[in-house]
Length: 333
Image: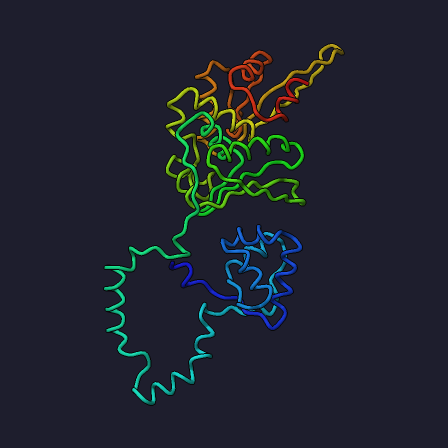
């Protein structure tokens, strides 16, 4: 609630607000713009019609995502700046009649706090407190694999989860992830294509889902700074751990073809590499592979786990496996 009250407004001269929003919507769909700002599509349309002034935080977010510069003559104002203008004449009349405006402020404040503590804070606001439902799955191999996918190529904010996959190489895997999300949580995610970076963003805007995932060990915000790791409930179950490792390597891992020559003869074999900047996660993946009978090593820079021998790579696909056709094609080719 404090965020709504303290937010600033972005004021622009007539027609310039509508022109700015039109530029934004040429870059991204209105649905994505609304989700990025945590507002409704109707609000975006109202901004375009210049029915209301824009929220400053939202306009800054849209500007950053679309790389469209903020208008030069943008003016930042308090959230309810227009109230003073609209109420000044009435306020003067009331003051002349009663000697003050709005009654006794201390009495009003006391009454409000009494109402809030006894009644207000227990009421559900028709807009703010509405949380869209999700299906809460029990702990399964499928949920553990989803955790691996999200830890690998995902991110969590206060209201959304996003999984980013390559538009071309991971096209088939993207379909697998979407089906898994629908099966686990009963939610149809949105998919946005970022042309510039050639990626697909799989987005779910559900506060309840964020709360559920966070309660099971996933951090909200920068996962590297928070030293993300595999949650304990997954580590304690071998089947869950295998599924989680599969999700991690399917997203943040790759199959490498290593070629070399000896006495004029060419040789090549496949390696598997998993990369992360989280030290606890690197150590957990390494230990998990060892626990499942696989030989691996951590590179000198501490950012990669490698499986390098031909037999160990074969064993990985037998024990851990993959749901990413990109990895399977590279290995079996």
